[in-house]
Length: 384
Image (cartoon, rainbow, N blue to C red; front, top):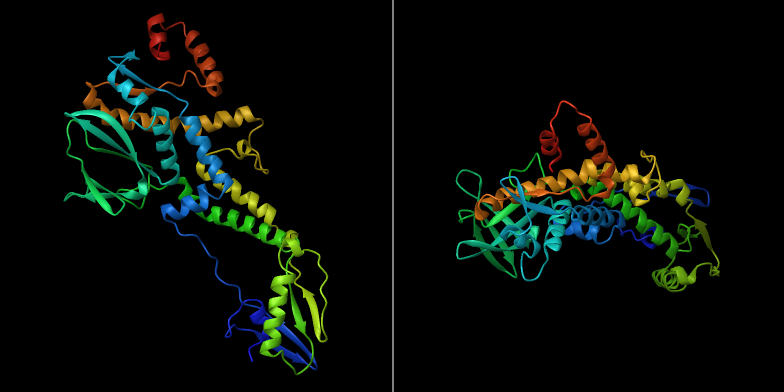
């Protein structure tokens, strides 16, 4: 009969076990360590495991998308800012379902989760009248004979629509992609780079939850110590059923167990402190924040805080993560839409960002103190 301890622990009938007999005592050695289980690296899996289930990933993406969306994109033509312009109206209300802020927030979030963001231009009489965000996992590149994208296939509900790139006055699709050294067409998201740390963080949370469900201590094993005898199949099934029904789960924590003759309870000596899951979880959280470019201090993650205060950490977030992201998206939109709007360009306006007020004050002081510059040159440098 297969060893009942292996079966009680969930192993198969062929599970390897090493037995060493010394008189009437039996030593059972569970020695093989299985390979690590990693989540799939597809967009749907990462979005489910990360954005939908991990609070660190969720907060990083929301923080980046919502904060970057606070920066307005202004329209200028010939160096003059134009608040009343067809392009400005389009950005304020890109389609009948979304506002401009909602559309751009989705663009920023898709870049963090998928590494790609797609916008489709709605054409009416040869003019761009609407903008629509496309879900990245539903879009695939159709390469031309030269290897560059000639069209994009958008698949939803089993139906595929081909969006060609030879449209006038602009291509039908704008594809924004973060750099991926191993892919010619698609980008790599920060969430993909943080996938290993994401699995570790989720596994630590699952471990803690399982520990709470089992009276906040590791499980153990029932040892049948009668020499030369084994439990019958009926005895094993009854014992296993009683353990699952009466002694597992948080509701049965601390419930006394009545053992019959020949049975002894042996606790497996693995404690959370020995495994150090708390520190491993915090280290994984810091790695996730690092991949997204968010200072851990802003997320409340304990550990090696590099910045002396929250204001300094917030400025670092803007300088190293948000400003490059907003500038890139503005340039991509401007290059795509300018031919349809008489050459009008888009530029981010950072003047209203409170976190950058100190940087702006220092810039104004430096330019104002440059006596060799005329007032017109100073205004040009400051963009006023």
